Length: 481
Image (cartoon, rainbow, N blue to C red; front, side):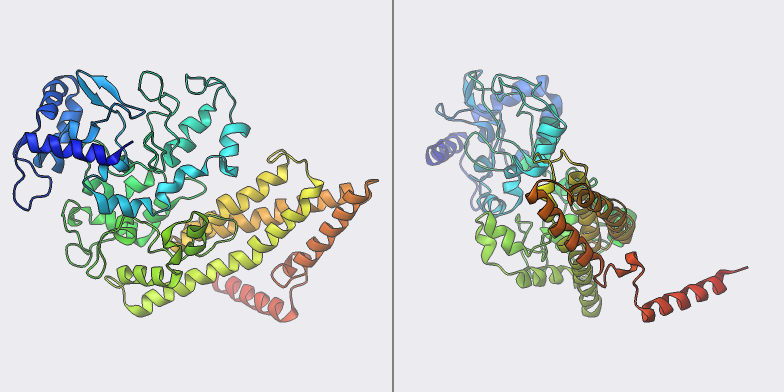
């Protein structure tokens, strides 16, 4: 798509519609002829869309249907609709004609790259393990998994395919995945957070908007938020949040509670609004072993790879200090880092090393072995829940849904499954399998004899055992009848 040509076209439409008000950006005195024609029809045929647009700032600025949906004839998704060349899909590149800064920040974020998960281990589950090739369309004649189409793709986004008639293929549309790959080559969907056609900032600021995707067994941020003191305060004081305030600066316009947007995107007295949600986080808790965000940014070749985690933490501390004192904030971060260190040292690092050592003894296809699911859920579900739980001060998710589940399955499933692999293969006639089994057996023994796991072998140190016995006796005495 020739963006410059489209920009000239937009300017021409605006100029023909009405002169701009001085210093008013793209505010017009009247709708363009093209948008007025759209409105005259959609007011009758799509009343809900018309009403949503009528409640938007676009309406008050006389920015209408055509200004957003206009297309050039050579665009892949362009088609003629009642004499106007338009496209169904409004992309960040389209929004960026007016909202240049916001789109630039979004493009630099992990959100915009979420569609790149396609082909990952996560996606293999939906495409292969859960799915088949039964959903066939014009753009997917060999078929695609309906589980992926209706699951992964709806949050992460997918490449939108365009059929010969210029309409989007039903396997890839409708889709407002945050990392959607658009026909014009842009990545992302502004409508993932700013729902069509009202594009409400207030709605984007509510936790439930983020909770559409940030929920469930592997990243339950909305559930964690709801159980946290932050979520409790929000629900108790939602009428004091001033969510529709244009400025919406924490500590200045509201102080009753923070939302996801408060901490990750919205303005403070020292920071501007940002659409890059990674600029205030100091751990990326997605992988088996958490990494600093600049490391994951570098893998995606984002410019933010040069922003160290210490700077990002300082950005977040600036948010926290609007409601909490420095001692409180420092204590929280020490607790957070302590949990990450515990998870890494006790479970993630040794667990990953054991899984790698077990691979020569496994069937080669991922998820064809029970232990594949066991290890995947330990880090991808339970380990993430623990890490996300502590990052948002959700104790139940940190412990009962997190570290408890990690420990339970590490000791009751993972270790026994590894030991079973050893027993099945250490007498193998295949020298390679025999050697791999012996190597795995040694690593299991070394892992369990570490001080972190010695209790499992009844090798707890006498000092610690005595301390545990004393505490148990005190507990029983305190609560005995």
